[in-house]
Length: 393
Image (cartoon, rainbow, N blue to C red):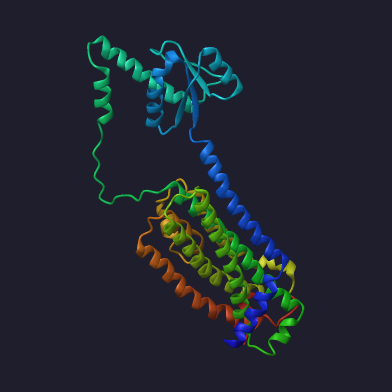
């Protein structure tokens, strides 16, 4: 293990001092901090979907409009203007999305060009309620009492398995966690592959193997680059959480945010070790940097597919059965499970299955990758076929 650590130390010093590593780390931190600030600014400015003006004669429609919009999952704020002329001027300037005019018994609206469909839906709901109330009055009833009774009427639902309630901020955290894992695996995996080919093409590997064994060289390289990547992920994730909590854009409990970062790091480590071993093994098959892309593409596709499926399905369907199953498969778990954990609602047994799967796969990859690496890393020239590398003595 001392030999492994010597190789790892060499990788850590070389990678950590590189300008590319420092710049990429700073850029990632700046991006996540900027996202937190922008999220806070957008949340503070755009608190409603639409702003509608009301005149003194239509002020009575302000509350019904907000209630109608809420019933169809829209947020409409109202602002009273001094008179219709001022309201029309604000609509013209874009300060108001629409202006309610008339005597308040019917819905008449002024817009700059076209009425937005979503705002129109809210207005149509309110118009229906006003017409309903007028009919009740004409029949001698009390519209307020009828509307209250209708509003209080609810469907009683009994769930055999109560669904998990996803918070919008948890969804965002899950997506960000998936992006960080995805980028880190691609960047550090490529670093491992390029490092192997660089040593092989420059014949440095022959000198190194005179002092250490092949498996020690491969393990040291994976360990060193893994530590460098771990620092980058931990710093970026921690900076994002601190910025979110400090600006107030992240309102979930600090313990939940910290848990997300911890699981982000855990899954980065598990995913990196598994993929880095595979990257190191297949990179040993070639002797030129130009050929690296061809041999690492299959592993990269597994990372990309897992990320794309997760980022495409989870935001709209967090409880997707397909994602549940795939997130427990070792090839997809490093990119999918961090997203699900950040969103919450992952059963403990599913998390245990995913971790256990990685714990089983990693030792197997150590043995398989070490054999391929040992048999191929000293063979220069043409690309070594995988079967030849496996069968070589």
